[in-house]
Amino acid sequence: MTNPQVAIFMLSLFIVLVLFGFPIALTLLAMGVGFGYYAYYQAGSVETIADALNNQVFYLLNQTAYSVMENDTLVAIPLFLFMGYVVERANIVNRLFFSLQMAARNLPGSMAVAALITCAVFSTASGIVGAVVTLMGLLAFPAMAAADYNKKFASGVICAGGTLGILIPPSIMLIVYAAIAEMSPLRLYAAAMFPGLMLAGFYILYVLIRAGLNPSIAPTPKMEHPPSRREVYLDLVKSFVPLTVLIMLVLGSILGGLATPAEAAAMGALGGLVLALIYGALTWRKVKESVYLTAKTTAMVCWMFVGSWIFAAVFSYLGGHTVIEHWVVAMDLETWQFLVMVQLIIFVLGWPLEWSEILIIFVPIFLPMLAIFDVNPYFFAMLVALNLQTSFLTPPMAMSAYYLKGVLGPQVELMDIFKGIMPYLAIVIFTMVLMYQFPGIALWLPDYLFGEYVP
Image 1 (cartoon, one colour):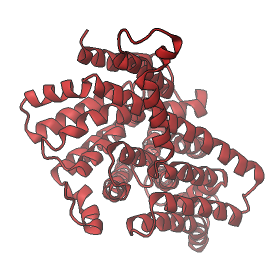
Image 2 (cartoon, one colour):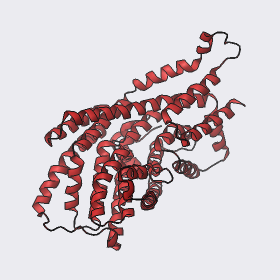
Image 3 (cartoon, helix red, strand yellow):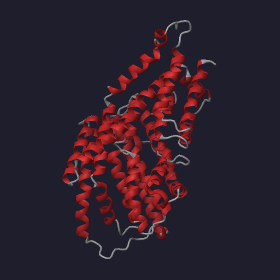
Image 4 (tube, helix red, strand yellow):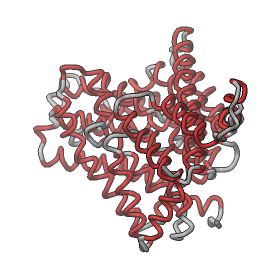
């Protein structure tokens, strides 16, 4: 086999192993080192064990691990994760959901609207899809089920709302994208603001229209002693304003150029502790749980980076990127055809794979081609970010559905969850088409804040 053929085999084998359930980070690491040993092996130079270990791939492994650990952009990941876990365990989200539910009680599908807004706010505070879907599954689904909400409708709301965490800043996914593509995380955050809020708005609009046309799927909750308007507003201020102020301070400091993402994340982590203290929910046990979960998730992300960078380096050394680039260029595509083809590939990959595998392995294959087709890399990043929402909403993987099923058990069937998320999948695709037609949705804010992008 030629080196390019080995590279394609390497990529195909990775997909197969992931589908069989092998851990992603360890699979990337093992395949990168294994195929790298082959790529850097020099015939006739191995006579002793010491010679066998004197392979360039081990130096690559050492340097890659060191580069990941000293990457300033990645410092923001554990801090944002800690902020999200502290907010989750301080029961702030519970207060927010029930306050929004009371404030929106006269709207069609009021509990679903409250759930979506809570998901959007909590997603902004944490950026952790699994945490948002799991918590809202335990919190909002039982409340909606008790109010006789249609189970498909209720599960779709929670799964779709929970995925907003990978798009709305401060998104862990955008930090990862910035590190992979060597792009400004500040510009990426600014570019994601309008698409993220627009997608959340479309979700809410869909719920209002659907519940308005068919009230039986989302009945108005019956309350014997509804609170007064003043009580609702006071409760909403106490639950909504503190968390929102914290989020605005974090994002404002980043977009305003007052702090780097890591510095803003540190401020957010401290703010989360302060909020937990104010609400009387700051206990040693909760802090210890938050630290443990932060360390666990951060370790997974960092090792995934080490493995993916080794994998990508070996894949490129074997000529894999060159083969794919020549194949795409030879097709003589127009710019719009190139974008459609790439997004279709990412969409299809979202059926068996999660966003992390797609982002770390496949997106770098297409990044060098953006200059050839004269595509703004930040516009491309937003198309990818929207498309990656589908990796959580597309069966048979649809990880948000499995998160929800995991916490609800026999209360809802998996097929009902799949049916419930289908309308939101269509909304994501519609939003992508709309942004393609009007690129300013993604590009206006970063150009306004930081000046027009120059390659």
